[in-house]
Image (tube, rainbow, N blue to C red; front, side):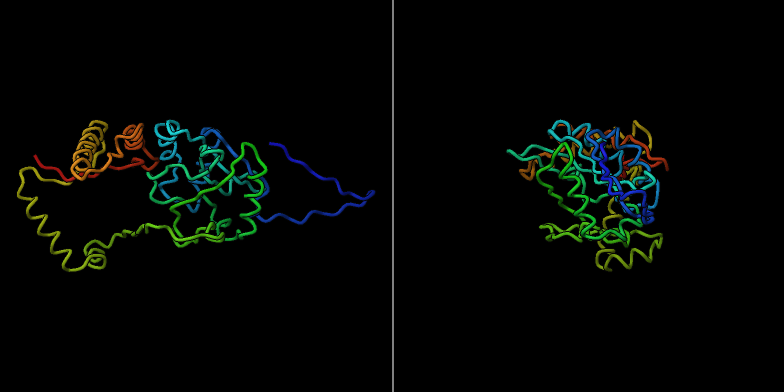
Length: 282
């Protein structure tokens, strides 16, 4: 990274520079390798950051390795730093060639239901539209180039904080995605979310399933169970999509490998990047 400083001193007179705010972005760097961006990415993940599970490093690195590379996607990770050299934002983009243009989009493609940058809380709440455009101007002057940013499927907000990209001109997505926060309210939460008619239908379905020998709810935790249930899931999806005359998206190059890698990858808290839950019977 090159930094140019313009010397505007006059004689021996000096003027003290104004103190920088903690949320001020003083440097922007673009990484074309996930490994180079990983330390900053994980620092943001570990702190109080505005981010979704779909933009976890482990989720998107598995996607890039198995799907993105085969699709001609090159990482284009825009990272902003404060005066102390700490990462304050990270936009997990990837570049693809579309005709004569280099187009940057969120990594993960349609496998990420929500697309969101990683933002340190104070930066997400303080940044302005002008601040975002300033970053975009720096990106436009950087190499490698991106001719167009196409940023789809973004939520307006996340966990009570507005998505800073909403400050830019935007339009509603064709498809709306719903998000539900599941608390620990148990039966009370179920009553609040589901109508009495829906709860009655679910109880009827449960009674029918409980009649099956060995019926149980199961969460895969061991490698063998993960592979067993994932194989069953991929088989069922293949049959259902064929019956509906749909293309089996899980048969696309690298997709099954991506899911298998994410299902086996453990997070620091012991969960997996993708957890598999199942209803089984003998």
